[in-house]
Image 1 (cartoon, rainbow, N blue to C red):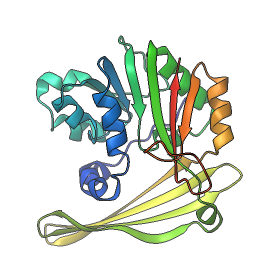
Image 2: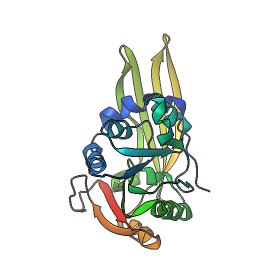
Image 3: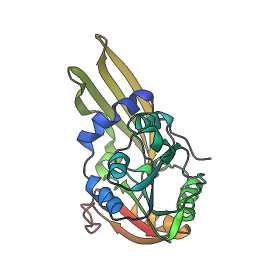
Image 4: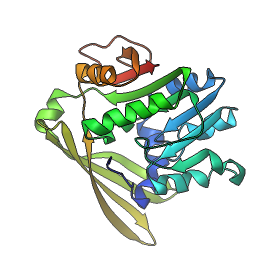
Length: 251
């Protein structure tokens, strides 16, 4: 069985505040693909609706799935109850939806949460099973940084701001690499002001990192067909300066 990541309630609570500031590079790429799709769309790892909410407002026939009930709870509060049927808590490795989709996306490194090869292939093949004959699957991953793989990252403040007016939020992140198993052991510490006190919570989890030909071989082993791998969200060539894998697959 694939590992289920339940994002802590405080992470889900602050997710939008954090990532509307530190994660913007992928928005136009995925929204452009969503706007260009006339049929049904599935977002794997829909989270709090970073793409989903605007896509739905724009008329997209979009659905979403996420392993985290806490993230889905935040998203539900943004939607009219008549639209709640579009989102569900579930594991994409084992989802069995009644619909097929013209576009499936798994943005912001969803695939890095799938640690074992057997589950990676389950995921890819299940995506295949949910695509229409002409459907596309788009996902992204980070290109491993050799310096970070060697040295790791210790107590780096990646957000220091407010989550509400006059209420401060700070996140401090650390990463310890495991080169042999291609894992990053990540710790995120949250500090925020609430009811005249400073609260602290710490979350530890693992992420898998991938290399180019490993990705190509995984896709080749799956039912999917690789169409393209880009090095950025503008369709740039994958080269030594690339920081992102942007992968497009089809049937």
